[in-house]
Length: 435
Ligand code: UDX
Image (cartoon, rainbow, N blue to C red; front, side, top):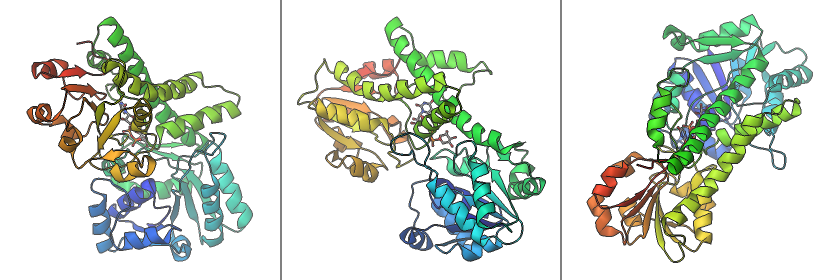
């Protein structure tokens, strides 16, 4: 099949490369010429394990190409994917759909023959209807069907998530479109991945409901973690104890500093607005948004409390800044709130992250960035682990002890065990573990 992918952001690039790897002919289109030039020169603008190799392989085998010119690719395409950004609109929290609608107009003028137009971006319920209306209005002769096909991939595990998903969701009432979508995902179908076909609006809602549910799970266990600290319990054991119940499931029950990233904060906010507009207030989602935002701020208070109530003039090493490991993404990262508050409280901060320091320096230009974890902890009064990168799990603790001023570790990701740390002479504070 011939695929045109509009937007070479995270989802577009990963989906384009993976569809090419499935054997389809894929053209990725972006208006940003510098991005396309870089991609054509083999440079990948995002940090994603395995993506560089996957792109290089499919470009070499001539199934994948990049261009700023949409004409030929869209004209020839069996399926045109809209994978442009849907940021939170300033002021009202709604998803900004201007890029989606601009893409729809562009597509309308170019498609030839029956074409499936697929929204892969996360879009509010009803966006597919609007995309359909725009195309029909712009080009009344166009033969097309608009499909919702949300993407559930996680940063850092994107290729695996795309190629081995738990399910594929296809939202359309058009049988021809279903056939095209099945053909596109045929390698997965052969692997017996369930393909759920629903009406378009339902599919659009599935994506928001999935992300919001995961955000609820995380926020719930974070609240239980706070309770554990107060009543002498251990949240990891609670997670295991509840997670083995299949109805609950063991994933997304790691207590930590609150969720961040490009999806959960944006999508929970957008879902709340969708509910509000539809006259169905989503109280749970609203609470999750509020509790998580508070939690990110409260993490700095936790550090301050662990240091006896003041960090003024104290040197604090921050290990990890990205919103999670294996990404350079700093969007909505808890580190941003933690840094702001600790700075305000007068701490001297020394930070290290294996991948996100470049991104972090754009948001926090005054932060001191170090060459490695051991450089960051030199003479520190406390070490705060913010992101659970593997290399922080494997620190040489004797070396850590010899470099810091005081052996205090505040582990916001629970990557060490309290016993283990105290046996090694550390004053250790973690999340939700009274023992
Ligand atoms: C998420 C969804 O998982 C994915 O399906 C969707 O397509 C996009 O949004 P992503 O944002 O890449 O993916 O990251 P994810 O791994 O889900 O983590 C999100 C945040 O939740 C991170 O800040 C992470 O640290 C936090 N988290 C996750 C927890 O605090 N505890 C957990 O148990 C799991």
